[in-house]
Length: 568
Image (cartoon, rainbow, N blue to C red; front, side):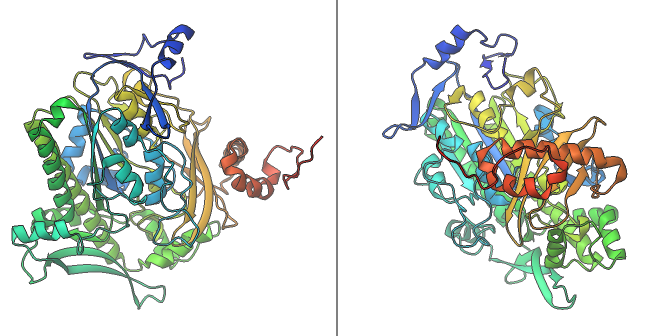
């Protein structure tokens, strides 16, 4: 039976082996009365796939998390103190090969909220007039299904896909902020919270400022260590991520106090800005900084960039050189500071998560709550003399953490799943646990079977795209496991003469596009990408260029590339 069919959830187990499989049973499911996210217009049709009590759900997202911090294949991960995230991993399932669709905030968030590859190709801050940067009014995000099915939906933190859909999903009292950086100086509630603590606004005690490409002019600030504006130590309790955690706890307490949590299932969404720069490291992390400085090293690809004076390699796409010049990390001491501050910021995220989990346990809600932890995209963390992310397809910006802790009454079978999965899968997975099936087209699949029976297809192909950011690169690519047992990432860059090919299992991946032993792999991946692009009308623009640029590597087929048709 197709893996997309819902599992029947019972109070004590997931009946993986007794899924409805007959045509009659499937017809009975379809005959259930349809509901709609917007009853008046009939938009967002869905129905219940079973009559079991739906669980409370908590989705936690962090922003821009490097695999160095959580992935067991990365040596640095053993030095990062994230006990609360690791506890979720122990109680749930860790997906070790999870990827976003676009390594930018807005497009990626749109993808996992809708369960579809996003038409959004850039963040609002850098997109030109006419480029869509917000979800459309007629889109349906998965929290809308939950809300329409009786869930009380609440959200705290960043949205960055336009506020309209968040108000649709979470109600008019929601306060999502729609920008890339946190509103630490203009969030009135946050400033009132700081005043109640007797804390003044932050300023930098030590600030990391990179250099422009002339290597002398000050360039991008990525934040650093903070104090109060009067120079006094800045407490963790007044840091913005910690404030978001407190706000989520307040939301939970309100729902429990007025008995809403007893009458209705809760859907809670905590969207944390950290560990994204600009960093805001408060007091109390001095010892952790010393410990990290004792073990922190530089990526080999950064050292290689130093040796060639940060010039392009012969087969390197121009877009990567542009980003390297944009960041201007010419001083290795600054990169060490960055990597240490970034790691400390991740530990702040973990403490925030731990605070929320602790409260759920105190209220007796943790065990039977479905909890999912994700990030919108990854981060370079110094590789190739770059940080942050961008409109290029490199393993570290595409990899994301994905942890699913199911309700205690439905203990998972697999602690780790190595099969490739996507953030596209999040929406259907959470709807599946809630016992809902949406009558909509999704690009992902439910991961419920991965937790309980099959571990998923090793041969699944996932697509990736670029867009508009610091540079413009409408890249397209895919990951696939090849006959040698390795997973590879192939990327076609519309803005460059050079393609990319990476071994996804490499800790510091290098471009294998010209490697003689990998030429058959390159050709096979080009064909796979060509098949994917021409099979979906959404990618017709990519296919129009790709079929010309890689003509010699693609099967020859007749066809009018002008798309000219005549009536018979």
